[in-house]
Length: 446
View 1 (cartoon, one colour):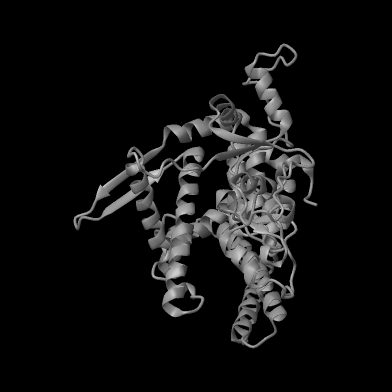
View 2 (spheres, rainbow, N blue to C red):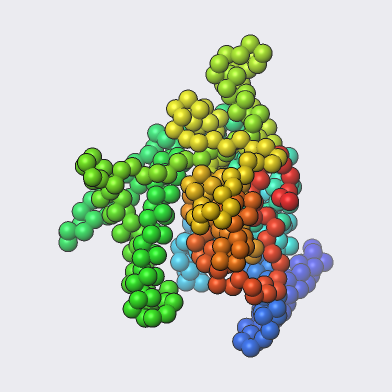
């Protein structure tokens, strides 16, 4: 008994010394001055700090798990460790709850916990992986956990999250279809007038209606942004800074929503602006669409029904902005003709106009977005869908042609960045080689 007690005491002392040494090292790091250091040094320091943050999250989760396992918080009357942290560390409820939530989630995902401990993934990666664990069940998740964690380490977060969504749909297609139907049934919107005559709006939209709405909102916000920049240039006589524009991003969003309502109200008038020209694009691989059409036509050579069509790991089924959809949504697209579909082949079909015209046509712009499917900024960007702009490569004023094989797609800020920095050497650092979000079965981008 004495030896066991002595061993425990030594372990306690060792653990506390290690934590005190860690705190001392962090104190020294916080005293360091990073201003004036070379950019590469600051970048390395930022990467190291990010990795340390993840490791500290894993350490925190381990301590919380041990603390809760013996119900230490109940000695003071706290219902959970959240109350203990609120009392002893004066934490906000949301912060304390997030710490406890992370600890609970990694307990059931050992490979995920290991990656967090090594600092390779963040707590948000854990959230996405735990959602997959809930959706497909512990047994199915355990089979794919290592592959998903490996993807989390090497992929951009948006691409990783999309891959996890494909995993969920592939493992449980019927559950995914039921969830999509439930999301449609739970749609709602509310608007109310406040006491001072203003208004408040709240809504929950399924994927396709939201895609239509968000695309038009972002298009009008870009129009208003260009209007603000033009006004500021005239006022200042130079290119304006973002802080010098007359409206903030949030204010432009409100004005864009108002303009959407004004255009809708004027639609029925003889000289009204007409409907939006936005077309919803659905991306699917040729095999999946062919099987869907055969099932619709009751083709005897393809005996499977709509319900029997299974999504394989190589199936592509998503909207233009990367939202993964079910077979039911693809079926709706084919039957209604309300969407434009892109079937992928190795080469694509380039549309050529040479230098006979300056601006890309709408068909060319749609083809470019279908080809690249997210911003082609060399240092990474997750913007996708209708907000992407067509960009000459090289630029028009430097001999570029209005051909889609001499162009790419970029978001507004990075399109302007390309114009402003053309001809300058790129800053040091890794470039993003995954700009094009390829279908799952085509391998890495070339």
